[in-house]
Image (cartoon, rainbow, N blue to C red; front, side, top):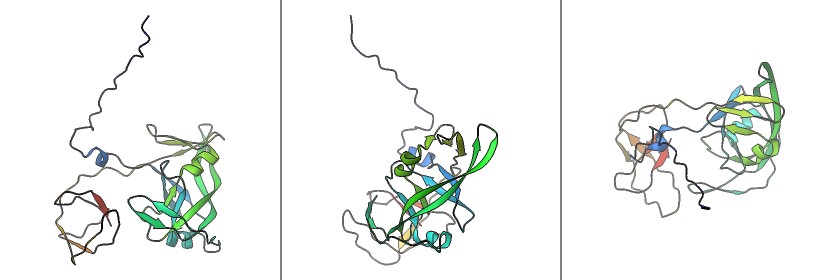
Length: 207
């Protein structure tokens, strides 16, 4: 009797075109939460981040009376950045319970604070595990053990065009480091730019 385990091959999706740009055709999922002094705030749901992260200026606007614990940590992504302490704050999700009852679900989240943090707020793996929050990527739904579900969203994909860009000053960036570079563009972009180096190298996002 054969003990070989059969292999099931999934059909290749149409967006996987083999052009090296598949990641540009999908966008991270986020949900909208309510901070204490803020209106609906976009929060990126990121199971690949093992901690919650929040922009320091956003935190100061949303929780002006909340103290910051002085403990700092190193956060590694493309490079390594230091946090400016952490805090535990409440956030609220607009939810549906049992299919038709609308309720707000409030939970405390530990956020590590970072200066100039473009995502604003990241709900990390620690929060997902602590509260049993499950993400259904296909249906764009976040569910909790209490029977509550919150809607996830993704920004609409937009067509990418070419924009001429250049550095204002000659800048040398050593390997495996990050350095802010002042750039000029042929147009004034309203959104973030996806930068592809002219002479090879890794792609980066620019504000």
